[in-house]
Length: 596
Image (cartoon, rainbow, N blue to C red; front, side, top):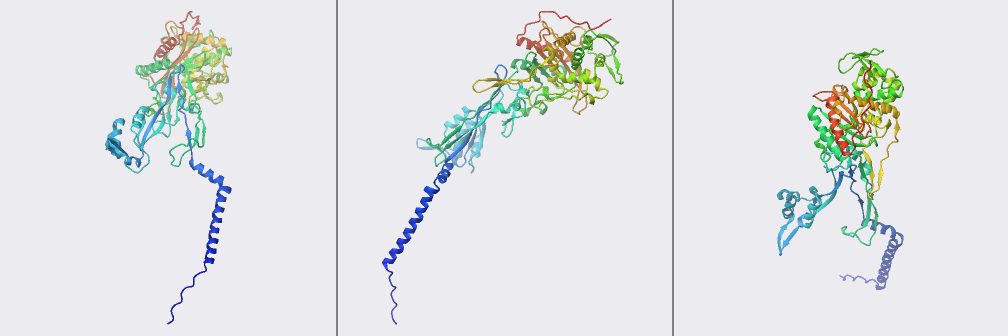
């Protein structure tokens, strides 16, 4: 057999040409790619690389403070830390001393941290075991305690800095200040009630942001890299009109009144008649903003501006002022006031106590709080006129005091009044008001007939210390100075012998005021509750404050003159002394209350 033929060797020159062509093709491809990267797509690729190195974080500032009129802090934000563990990193924790391992892993870290955190080391160690990159170990610790933890330099123990809202004076003015709520556990993110809610935007400020370039590990900032910052704008401190000392005393006295009378609730308002500023706004059992859940839901807000009731006899002031202003009566006008009186539309009204028919002046009707006399005064004016003055004195609209959840009360148009309401409104029935609205009536009389907008907020202080007063409505004249002064004198008759407010008198100061006893809606929504009140002005010869005291369902007696007036006396006395108001230097010239 012939032997196989050996393969024929390729031409070396051909092989060299092929390799050269392939090499040139590869070079062309790489060159084209390089041109695309460096020339065509260079900017987009660079931008993408930079974006992967850039980090943007929000810059926040602590929520601003709420302070009283003298700068006493009622709400502030403090620095706190939550502490977590990276369960993966903590596995590699090792601590040595003199070359020997003294602690390692989760158990070793727990033994070191447990005394600082006052925790059981076994429970703490168990929380460190797992595969999570972050698990909370403890929340809300002070910066000082975090410094102790940080000093141990345990890799895997990581801080989370947070801001916590605190209220140094506990329940003092808690109904006014309000509290926080929202997503964060135990420390809300937004205001829910009071000033915290009403002035959220001013307190919170505006967040900023910082963008910086970090290294490939993501752990360090590149000093020469990109760095842009938009500064956060701090919020404004809210300066209240509340006087801490007067608020404190009024709160204590309100709680005492509940114990003394068996009332279910007490409200006290102290207002500066010269400015409209609220010096104290008290609701019994006021919420502690540090722990709002400990209070009943009804006690977490400001009932003084949200809860409504029939004002009762304190509203007779409006009827008297309207009659004088309209020229249909004077303080000396004569009326015959029986115990029972029936109007032309067959509606019968009675006084609180049975009595013989009395010959009373207009001033006497107010001093003795005669319902039958007041209805007769109302008969001198049209229903439209009666409604006009009720609205001028502020019934049926919010005061704009500056608190979240303020009620406008209930005030219907006179065309919608039924046959009984048309006369009941003359002595405070058939309408509903808040404690602050009732107080405002007396502030108008005390301020020569001019209505000033009540406010609990004096203004706002920027981070640089610039103070901006809160804008309030322009003063509005309600009745003439002459009418207001005549009514003020009539109110002084109420606190004299024979009047219903004798227990409101203050040694050294002339006092004008009015008692009230009225109905309010009970838990069933029906008028089964009683409201006893006294609202007074002091000093009557040169008014500086109005103080109102409202007691809900007193058990000892239902009359404002015996339950609320003594509370007025104590609170007004404290406020006058605290404000250094000099005693009265003149004796009153009063109107006669009866005629022959």
